[in-house]
Amino acid sequence: MSETLKPNGQGLQRVIRATMCSIQGIKAAYTHEAAFRQEAWLVILLLPIAWLTSHSLGQFVALASCLVLVLIVELLNSAVEAVVDRISLEHSELAGRAKDMGSAAVTLSLVIVALVWGHHFYHYFTG
Image 1 (cartoon, rainbow, N blue to C red):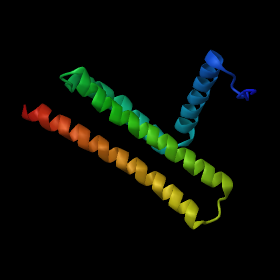
Image 2: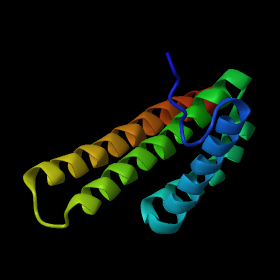
Image 3: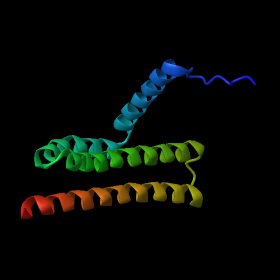
Image 4: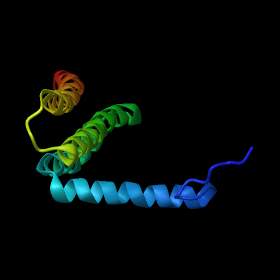
């Protein structure tokens, strides 16, 4: 049985090339997606606050993880939007539904941030 070679190679070479593709994706999102830029800056501003107000590494990880989750969901939403727009810019109920679902996913990830950070600060300020 012959193994099909992937265009990015195998082993460490594949990991390096996949990492480069990931970096290109983050750069593209930052360059072309205002929402991603805003959320990235929010993460950059909130991470030091998370570090300074956390009583344990676990608290910091929880606060940081939900922030990173927002970026992940925004990247996926932007990818869906790019593919939908690549297929056609004409109005389509299915395309609109796909974009709305991506947007809803971002909103739900922001709800998670509000819940986790709200819980954190409630306990931080009430002792």
